[in-house]
Image 1 (tube, rainbow, N blue to C red):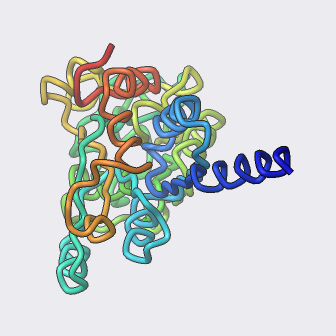
Image 2 (spheres, rainbow, N blue to C red):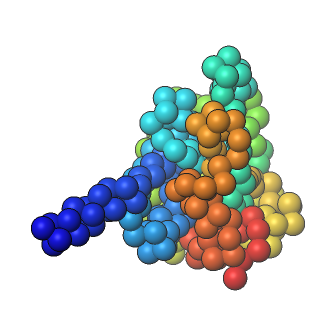
Length: 277
């Protein structure tokens, strides 16, 4: 009987202490979040974490639908999302967790090192269609243009900082993920795309933009023209309109913002928002 009691007590203890954490959103933040989740689960082995990276808009919608605890986002809330938040009596708190520079990528064999914002806008609106129009020394070949899809916060940043209100050309090929952009540009000598700096590999070449390279130093100095903060959002309504100071969400937030958590930001190829070890 005593043995049975101990078994039941152990079972009840596991059930009570087991917790879940659901994180959805940005494809850009996903590589950082993977490292965070892996390290977090070692600290809290009783926590089951679900992580999805289908786009910033997807994460924010999940926050509205109450199907996620945390929404990762590579953009701030849109005006219509703020309106919806107010109407529904919600309060989505933005937490800056890192900084990023959008890297313009081409095939390593393409003889170009620098490109201007104005030229990028003309390429993505269809005004420029061949590389020789960018520079007569470049091949007279059509530019294969890739972009993230419209659910992406990276796409929203591109629209804001590069297109600046201009209409995207219908010939631009929209891709589901940053990794898909890397892979597509890596196999096409005449392609161009853009991605968060943490995704850039030796398979592609990151260009200077307006003469400035997408480096940690230049993003921190505020001189790289396509830089941005990265966010997590939580809904205070789920915590009785107060900041969560205990529970799995609070534990995760503390870890992410800690020196150890911010060190993982750097390991993922991005820029820590706070002091890192």
